[in-house]
Image (cartoon, rainbow, N blue to C red; front, side, top):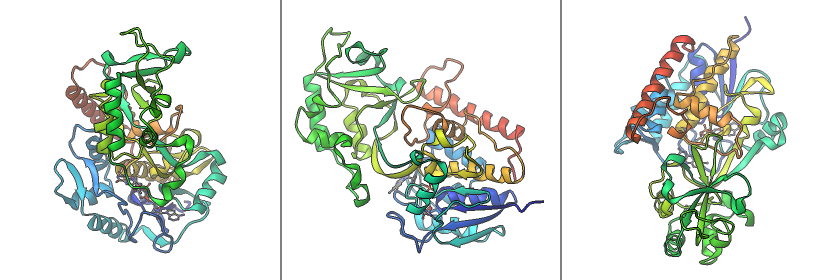
Length: 438
Ligand SMILES: Cc1cc2nc3c(=O)[nH]c(=O)nc-3n(C[C@H](O)[C@H](O)[C@H](O)COP(=O)(O)OP(=O)(O)OC[C@H]3O[C@@H](n4cnc5c(N)ncnc54)[C@H](O)[C@@H]3O)c2cc1C
């Protein structure tokens, strides 16, 4: 029988989870972490599973997208979730952790696993044999180059300048209208008009809102074609009306006139259940984004699936290079995981690590890698990131990614409840049909 050995590169959240899942399935794992010799601009310890910023892993309420993802990870024996539950600190409805105790626990469990060998040092090329690459948003330059050579030069993004995304159903249909500028195209944009008074109040709030401090590694993002919306607004009261909020060529069917200003929303996926605010890449803090962007009348009750960001982030053009199993199309023994595959967030990265670890172990054992059902949060997230779409940008867990319910359910709370029930049923059916266990 061939050796059941897997190399995992990157001992962050995804790599640690992938190593754990593979070792739990009887595979020998060599887990490589570049720190402490190799440095990244965000990590500061030598522990595996270090949380680079917030110590919160998001809501733990069962009927939220983040809560559903946690429930699925717990059910699948996630190392990261077990350490988080063990080292949680009081944080209301969120799951926050003592970050040092958490990372020490992840490190200790891996270091003491009889099938895991922990190695330190930067890996600068893709391993020859079965491997999981989970080097994260701050992947070292040499590894980024190796990925580009292997997977294709245009397949790696280095920065993430993303506008916020809202759910289509949360946009007020009474205060928005579908149309294309000068009626060219087929009404492809959902337009959110503002009166002069609404625009001026919005502009004032936007230029006064708090932004995330600019980090040296993020400075290259600031070129003229990609300015944050608040930066554009600071150039003058009317700059936005000649830029992303320009109303020309649009007529509001309710008034029969061109609005004073218009925010345009564009479909993020084919179904149009998710919409992004065109031209609204931003460095506003997330709380400020919710407050300021809800001043746009049609977005007063908008549900944000993802906030805007502008930061260094290495991630793949996943639809071009990855299967939904997270296996590289061009290299069947290579799996990718974590933020690198185009998910965003601590537990989303962990989920991608979990699936890559399970599938790499399956491939080594001669079994077919599995695709999680789309009705589960894990399945929906990985289906979304690996499916072709107009603009590939990282994605958080969200109810907007789940397939619509077959039955009509009235009220958001009841719909979410049904989504969670359906996800649990789908995971149970999946686990009873496919043996993914140890
Ligand atoms: C500055 C910053 C702040 C963030 N803040 C948050 C937040 O508050 N909340 C949130 O949910 N998400 C946040 N994220 C996004 C994301 O959730 C985290 O980056 C998460 O840690 C990603 O997990 P990962 O396993 O993919 O990568 P990481 O956790 O970064 O792990 C990758 C590991 O690979 C190692 N490595 C890199 N290159 C090599 C190499 N060539 N050889 C060997 N080892 C290598 C790195 O040292 C690192 O340990 C943030 C991201 C960044 C960049």
